[in-house]
Image 1 (tube, rainbow, N blue to C red):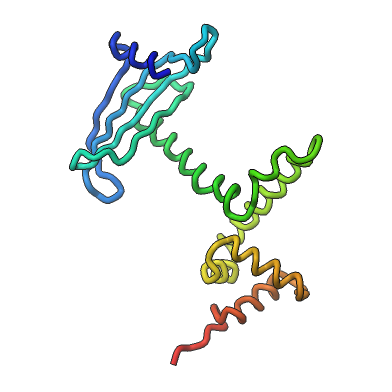
Image 2: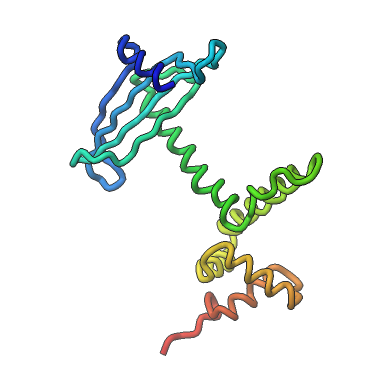
Length: 195
Protein backbone atom coordinates (compact mmCIF):
# COMPACT_ATOMS: atom_id res chain seq x y z
CA UNK A 1 0.00 0.00 0.00
CA UNK A 2 2.82 2.43 0.86
CA UNK A 3 4.40 2.19 -2.61
CA UNK A 4 1.00 2.79 -4.20
CA UNK A 5 0.51 5.88 -2.00
CA UNK A 6 3.91 7.26 -3.00
CA UNK A 7 2.96 6.81 -6.65
CA UNK A 8 -0.29 8.70 -6.05
CA UNK A 9 1.62 11.59 -4.51
CA UNK A 10 3.85 11.82 -7.57
CA UNK A 11 0.75 11.96 -9.80
CA UNK A 12 -0.94 14.58 -7.62
CA UNK A 13 -3.74 12.20 -6.59
CA UNK A 14 -2.90 12.29 -2.89
CA UNK A 15 -4.45 15.21 -1.01
CA UNK A 16 -3.32 17.12 2.08
CA UNK A 17 -4.78 19.57 4.56
CA UNK A 18 -3.05 21.41 7.40
CA UNK A 19 -4.99 22.81 10.37
CA UNK A 20 -3.91 24.57 13.54
CA UNK A 21 -6.00 23.62 16.58
CA UNK A 22 -5.91 23.74 20.34
CA UNK A 23 -5.19 20.32 21.84
CA UNK A 24 -6.16 18.68 25.13
CA UNK A 25 -3.62 20.76 27.03
CA UNK A 26 -5.08 23.96 25.50
CA UNK A 27 -1.86 24.50 23.53
CA UNK A 28 -1.73 24.92 19.77
CA UNK A 29 -1.08 21.82 17.67
CA UNK A 30 -0.59 21.35 13.93
CA UNK A 31 -2.75 18.65 12.34
CA UNK A 32 -1.50 17.45 8.96
CA UNK A 33 -4.06 15.26 7.17
CA UNK A 34 -3.34 13.28 4.00
CA UNK A 35 -5.74 11.10 2.04
CA UNK A 36 -6.24 9.18 -1.17
CA UNK A 37 -9.14 7.28 -2.71
CA UNK A 38 -9.21 3.90 -4.45
CA UNK A 39 -6.02 2.51 -2.90
CA UNK A 40 -5.65 -1.29 -3.25
CA UNK A 41 -5.46 -3.01 0.12
CA UNK A 42 -2.99 -5.65 -1.12
CA UNK A 43 -0.60 -6.06 -4.03
CA UNK A 44 -2.86 -8.27 -6.16
CA UNK A 45 -4.98 -7.53 -9.22
CA UNK A 46 -8.27 -8.33 -7.43
CA UNK A 47 -7.42 -6.35 -4.28
CA UNK A 48 -10.12 -4.56 -2.36
CA UNK A 49 -10.06 -0.80 -3.06
CA UNK A 50 -10.17 1.40 0.05
CA UNK A 51 -9.95 5.07 0.90
CA UNK A 52 -6.89 5.91 3.00
CA UNK A 53 -6.25 8.82 5.33
CA UNK A 54 -3.51 9.68 7.80
CA UNK A 55 -2.84 12.33 10.42
CA UNK A 56 0.36 13.65 11.94
CA UNK A 57 0.01 15.97 14.92
CA UNK A 58 2.91 18.13 16.03
CA UNK A 59 3.12 20.43 19.00
CA UNK A 60 4.19 24.10 18.93
CA UNK A 61 7.85 23.05 19.15
CA UNK A 62 7.48 20.83 16.06
CA UNK A 63 7.67 17.49 17.92
CA UNK A 64 5.38 14.75 16.57
CA UNK A 65 2.91 13.84 19.32
CA UNK A 66 0.62 11.52 17.34
CA UNK A 67 0.73 9.74 14.00
CA UNK A 68 -1.63 7.15 12.55
CA UNK A 69 -3.33 6.04 9.34
CA UNK A 70 -6.81 4.66 8.74
CA UNK A 71 -8.70 3.00 5.90
CA UNK A 72 -12.42 3.35 5.20
CA UNK A 73 -15.03 2.83 2.53
CA UNK A 74 -16.39 6.35 3.13
CA UNK A 75 -15.48 9.00 0.55
CA UNK A 76 -12.83 11.34 1.98
CA UNK A 77 -12.84 15.09 1.31
CA UNK A 78 -11.23 18.15 2.86
CA UNK A 79 -14.53 18.77 4.67
CA UNK A 80 -14.75 15.36 6.39
CA UNK A 81 -11.16 14.10 6.77
CA UNK A 82 -10.76 15.53 10.30
CA UNK A 83 -14.03 13.90 11.42
CA UNK A 84 -13.10 10.54 9.91
CA UNK A 85 -9.72 10.63 11.66
CA UNK A 86 -11.44 11.56 14.95
CA UNK A 87 -13.78 8.58 14.53
CA UNK A 88 -10.81 6.30 13.84
CA UNK A 89 -9.03 7.57 16.94
CA UNK A 90 -12.17 7.01 19.03
CA UNK A 91 -12.34 3.44 17.75
CA UNK A 92 -8.77 2.82 18.90
CA UNK A 93 -9.64 4.37 22.26
CA UNK A 94 -12.46 1.83 22.62
CA UNK A 95 -10.05 -0.97 21.69
CA UNK A 96 -7.48 0.14 24.23
CA UNK A 97 -9.80 0.96 27.10
CA UNK A 98 -12.43 -1.77 26.80
CA UNK A 99 -11.17 -4.71 24.76
CA UNK A 100 -7.80 -4.73 26.52
CA UNK A 101 -9.67 -4.90 29.84
CA UNK A 102 -11.41 -8.03 28.59
CA UNK A 103 -8.09 -9.52 27.48
CA UNK A 104 -5.73 -8.47 30.28
CA UNK A 105 -7.61 -7.41 33.41
CA UNK A 106 -9.02 -10.61 34.85
CA UNK A 107 -11.53 -11.69 32.19
CA UNK A 108 -8.99 -13.88 30.30
CA UNK A 109 -10.89 -13.40 27.06
CA UNK A 110 -7.98 -14.23 24.75
CA UNK A 111 -7.41 -17.58 26.47
CA UNK A 112 -10.91 -18.86 25.67
CA UNK A 113 -10.63 -18.98 21.91
CA UNK A 114 -9.99 -22.38 20.38
CA UNK A 115 -11.46 -24.39 23.26
CA UNK A 116 -14.12 -26.95 22.45
CA UNK A 117 -15.26 -28.47 19.20
CA UNK A 118 -18.24 -26.31 18.29
CA UNK A 119 -19.79 -23.79 20.66
CA UNK A 120 -17.65 -23.63 23.79
CA UNK A 121 -15.60 -20.63 22.64
CA UNK A 122 -18.81 -18.71 21.82
CA UNK A 123 -20.32 -19.62 25.18
CA UNK A 124 -17.21 -18.48 27.08
CA UNK A 125 -17.11 -15.24 25.07
CA UNK A 126 -20.78 -14.59 25.85
CA UNK A 127 -20.25 -15.22 29.57
CA UNK A 128 -17.24 -12.89 29.59
CA UNK A 129 -19.19 -10.14 27.84
CA UNK A 130 -22.11 -10.55 30.25
CA UNK A 131 -19.71 -10.31 33.23
CA UNK A 132 -18.06 -7.22 31.76
CA UNK A 133 -21.47 -5.64 31.13
CA UNK A 134 -22.64 -6.42 34.65
CA UNK A 135 -19.46 -4.99 36.18
CA UNK A 136 -19.86 -1.84 34.09
CA UNK A 137 -23.48 -1.53 35.23
CA UNK A 138 -22.37 -1.93 38.87
CA UNK A 139 -19.75 0.79 38.38
CA UNK A 140 -22.48 3.14 37.19
CA UNK A 141 -25.24 2.31 39.67
CA UNK A 142 -23.91 0.79 42.92
CA UNK A 143 -22.19 3.20 45.32
CA UNK A 144 -20.96 0.39 47.62
CA UNK A 145 -19.39 -1.45 44.69
CA UNK A 146 -17.69 1.78 43.52
CA UNK A 147 -16.29 2.47 47.01
CA UNK A 148 -14.92 -1.06 47.37
CA UNK A 149 -13.43 -1.11 43.87
CA UNK A 150 -11.79 2.28 44.43
CA UNK A 151 -10.32 1.10 47.74
CA UNK A 152 -9.17 -2.35 46.58
CA UNK A 153 -7.70 -1.09 43.32
CA UNK A 154 -7.16 -3.43 40.39
CA UNK A 155 -10.15 -5.39 39.15
CA UNK A 156 -8.12 -8.61 39.39
CA UNK A 157 -7.44 -7.95 43.09
CA UNK A 158 -11.16 -7.32 43.65
CA UNK A 159 -11.98 -10.68 42.01
CA UNK A 160 -9.42 -12.38 44.26
CA UNK A 161 -11.12 -10.87 47.32
CA UNK A 162 -14.54 -12.05 46.10
CA UNK A 163 -13.24 -15.54 45.44
CA UNK A 164 -11.63 -15.85 48.88
CA UNK A 165 -14.69 -14.54 50.73
CA UNK A 166 -17.23 -16.67 48.88
CA UNK A 167 -15.06 -19.78 49.22
CA UNK A 168 -15.27 -19.71 53.02
CA UNK A 169 -18.35 -17.63 53.85
CA UNK A 170 -21.99 -17.69 52.81
CA UNK A 171 -23.79 -14.43 52.06
CA UNK A 172 -27.56 -14.39 51.55
CA UNK A 173 -27.45 -11.44 49.14
CA UNK A 174 -25.03 -9.37 47.11
CA UNK A 175 -25.77 -6.41 49.39
CA UNK A 176 -24.69 -8.39 52.48
CA UNK A 177 -21.44 -9.36 50.78
CA UNK A 178 -20.73 -5.72 49.92
CA UNK A 179 -21.71 -4.64 53.43
CA UNK A 180 -19.26 -7.18 54.87
CA UNK A 181 -16.50 -5.85 52.59
CA UNK A 182 -17.28 -2.23 53.47
CA UNK A 183 -17.01 -3.05 57.20
CA UNK A 184 -13.79 -5.01 56.71
CA UNK A 185 -12.19 -2.23 54.69
CA UNK A 186 -13.62 0.42 57.07
CA UNK A 187 -14.96 2.58 54.26
CA UNK A 188 -18.28 4.20 53.39
CA UNK A 189 -20.70 4.21 56.34
CA UNK A 190 -18.16 2.12 58.32
CA UNK A 191 -15.25 4.53 57.99
CA UNK A 192 -13.44 4.93 61.29
CA UNK A 193 -12.96 8.60 62.14
CA UNK A 194 -9.32 9.63 62.38
CA UNK A 195 -8.33 10.99 65.77
